[in-house]
Image 1 (spheres, rainbow, N blue to C red):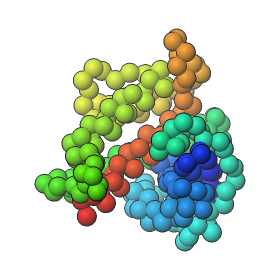
Image 2: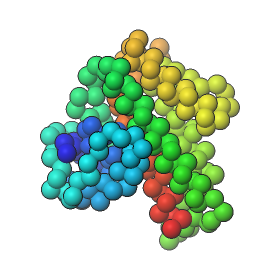
Image 3: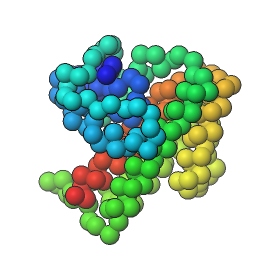
Image 4: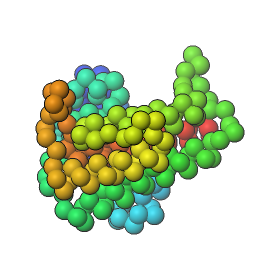
Length: 216
């Protein structure tokens, strides 16, 4: 499986180029690759219904680093912030359908994790840290609403989760078919559609897996 490595000064991400959302971090490249391989079965369960041909890597040696990119401030903060190689390539109708399928798979995983965790108290860190389940879900919805601006789109004020998700899909379709300027009227940087999908899917799955782990 081809992967890319995004290297910050304190944290490194490894991500599968062809599988948005499948990205994990570590203190260095080797740990990031090992973590990515370890999460392979979990990602396989996420995309199983989509039948897109995901093959779970056996271990880190099944991962081929085809590109290393310099991270940015968000990398050390804990966010895969740099587009993967090829993210600027055109997207045809077949690939657009595939990307939407992966987005919806990540949302199903988040909804399933939340459903299983309802009524349970999520474990906290040694200092009592960690959002509650409702706070996690609100955070993901609000983040996705904010991500829309990166494709020159906006959800209605006070929109619920399903409305925001529908807006994400519409924004993606519009950006693919009609393009989007590199910068907004106030200078804000836009995202290319592939990276938009990569970021939205990763964020949903990161919190889905957090919920699973903290409710186990």
